[in-house]
Image (tube, rainbow, N blue to C red; front, side, top):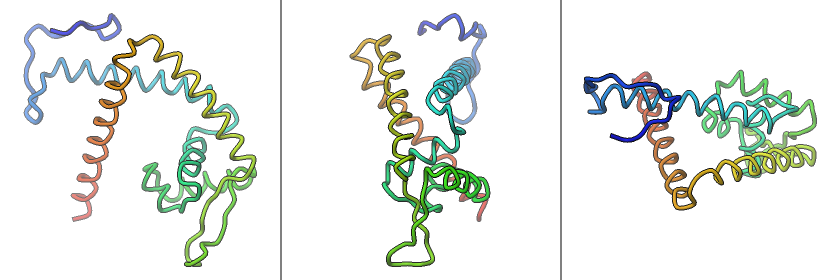
Length: 173
């Protein structure tokens, strides 16, 4: 049995297996508790990185930075935000001068979103702070485990995305 940290709580003595995954309920509950703790700690990190803007605005800026230019369709899909929430978020970023709207060169029906100089500086600051914090966190972990953690996190995120993709397809059909 693997060692659990004190914040993970105690496990039930007689574990039962869930019907779907074969994963024992105490293991699943411990994992969910770990995720909740991770989410709270990550939220604290995000409040340090995104001091002048909302978390949704922060994520929109970073997505645009990654693609250099983006459409609202791409952003809505990547960020899993509904169109009205995304539109309000983009409008605020445009109003603050961090994002610019440009006509798509080959298809006028689409608007491209690009970072302004102010938006680029904001992204640089977000990335600098976030990178510094994550470097310090990774110093608490044996270097041999760094790639494992990243790989496992990517596997889990892909599995979650696949779950929601299938669920959304089921709802549409």
